[in-house]
Length: 104
Image 1 (spheres, one colour):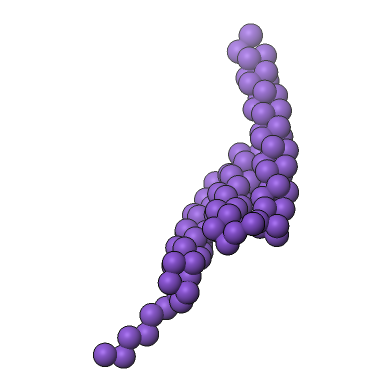
Image 2 (cartoon, rainbow, N blue to C red):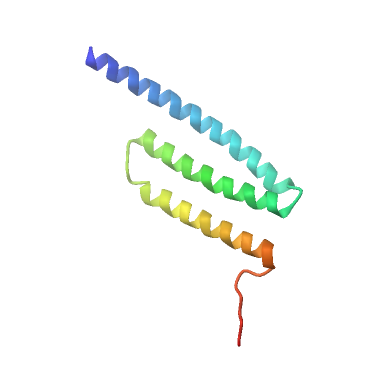
């Protein structure tokens, strides 16, 4: 009885993770389109930030599918680099420079 429940939950988990990966893949395709054809630079920056979030989600789902914790470092690294990239793009859009060099 309990073995049947475990097999059922494993099958449900596999199905849901595959479905989520398909949804994220469609989202990534649409976000790449927004980056390439965004009417404003702000739209492109938001799309790039969302692409970073989706890449973190893909790495997390692959970690669940492979039943491993080895990808946790990669997930954190992708998230940190995505955040720093978003901050740099936002600063560039606001001021036109990323690193201020005040020689006062």
